[in-house]
Image 1 (cartoon, rainbow, N blue to C red):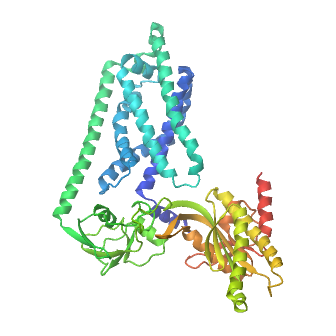
Image 2: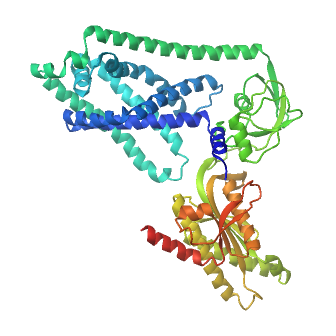
Image 3: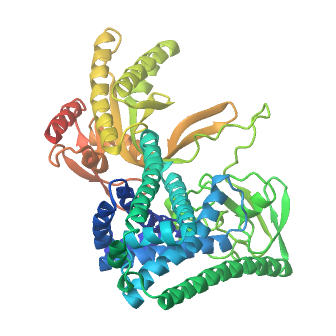
Length: 577
């Protein structure tokens, strides 16, 4: 077992600035959703809004939550500004610059509101709640209502774009998309209608002098002098923010100037192409700047290794890999120091290299080849099945007879996989890879794979009975099952492209299938699949095995008779129900 410090070190290496920004953004979006739902109570009454704000404040002003919230706000904004400085090439889809502009505009729009409410409470004890704010927007300063409406729209769209980028690769996104879209439309609509209805009610009530004496006191809204101080603070902070953005843009210009004065370097690609770029650009950014096709499934975020290059010649003078780059290279088992990630390597001297993965550009007919199914990160369960004794089978039969039997075997296996919700994926000789989870959650995918293994055993029994007159001994098989995060997509070239899965989880499933020979069993199931499927801990015998390519042994479950898996899964489902 790995120690806690080692696990923490691994977590730090695996975490990038983008992931930190995502977590902070989710926290802020949760606050926005809570606030919008509170606004929506205005469709009932202002009293309902005030009752709702009590619970809203009770949660978000709880000290630990407050610390997390303000830390998330500062970190998210800071990383957003830093990303503006750091990024050198902007090859964006339309929605990405929109998200950037909206995100950078939020501090300007929200500053006056935050200072008026939070700093007013801290400095002067102001108690501005819905009646006071709605009176300001609908009676005293209607122009501010438009600013607040713009803020609501901008914050909501920015948050929804970020959530979309986060969830679009998830397994459940296709099924959840209609509901998420409905929420994305309904929540801000109800919030703005609630503000409008509440504002109309306050505007009518404010004609009553008693209402104004009760709801617009000095204790609640402060004096003219106090509000002028708050306005000056807000104005200074807005100017300071604009100054910060100006400094960032100036720093970008200074950096570009220094890089050019610092000299240009030559990057030589393996195909003979050479480009000259300023020092400081990553190899991937250089490829984008000069329109050189370069594979990068994750878009240069160091979440994949498809942009890998192999440096030609001396690599000792290259900058050391960052923690994130070292983590990714270690995950793919690359110990060769000449192999680097193009998105992370920023050479400061001439460099010769070649790409390890060829980028998809155009097919033979000149049309862009499809990339719609490249780079999706999913949790899948891989099931490898292999026919035993096929070599001996072929020795004593005509080639066409052997092909016939192997095809009947693969047909029986495929039928069991399809019946249980899986997808036959790759056929390699007399073996097959099947995938589960393309349209199911992890627990269901694990159960489907286990039931499919039981179904395979049943179908092979039927096949053995059918071919008993022609077989000297029954067809035997081995199955390996493991689940985990993989990359799914189209792999191949031109007209020879197939949809498949790549990743450690697939490789482990293949290794487990091999182990059925040494363990004299029909199936080996990883502990991950057993646990996720919800089978009892004592349902199958456990064993620790060494996996080639892994430093530590792995816990697996040995299944002597694969037929029992169907009954175990059915029993587990009844218990769960």
